[in-house]
Image (cartoon, rainbow, N blue to C red; front, side, top):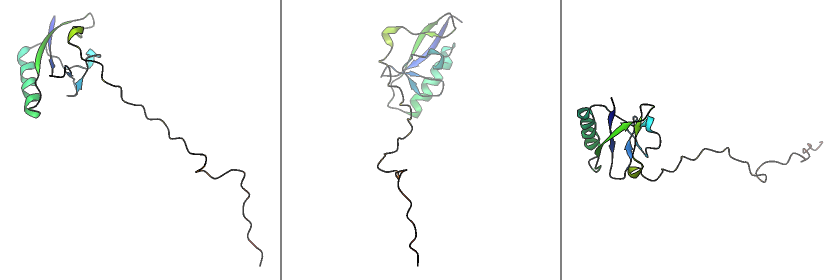
Length: 108
């Protein structure tokens, strides 16, 4: 198996194993098939789910790790990374002051 087929759309993104579109920077996450007929079937399924997609098969050689060696000329610009969630900081004005004196009940 020296060649595999991957699927690329009109935006130069590649179909991933999880059926999402990826920028191809992580070749291990890409859908790939050593058989052209299987790749054609997957291409058909992608088009059936979203007819606006214009997808094509791309034949790629394998690198030393057995992953698709994608030609850098067909790679899209990198996708933005998802923002990591930061813990919310409490506003000091919204929290009660620690040095506030407790109120005492008035004696009857």
